[in-house]
Amino acid sequence: MTQGERIREVRKTLGLTLEKFGEKIGMKKNSVSQIENGIARPSIDTLLFLCKKLGIPLSYLMCESKKEEIQYKRMQTI
Image 1 (cartoon, rainbow, N blue to C red):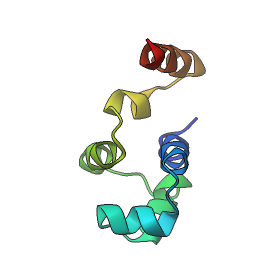
Image 2 (tube, helix red, strand yellow):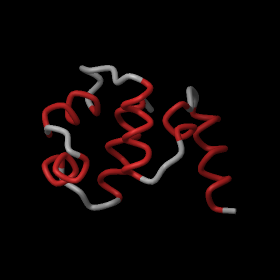
Image 3 (cartoon, one colour):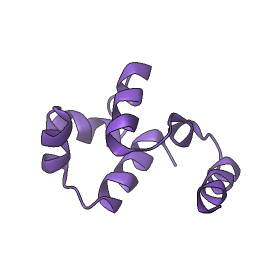
Image 4 (spheres, rainbow, N blue to C red):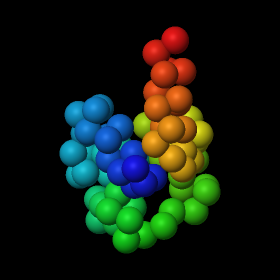
């Protein structure tokens, strides 16, 4: 799963549309959409900003493999 897909997953879990999420964080919905779809690659500062707004740690977005993602999700349930 890519960083953008993870951002989308969390956004949807929070029940936010692209438009509502964009309004909440002060970004245009097109910008968020481009990040979620892998068209735009956000800077580390943007990733940190998104993590803060979504309430997730940066480590979740930085998981590079399915194994790391599963380990992260297991740690969150403990």
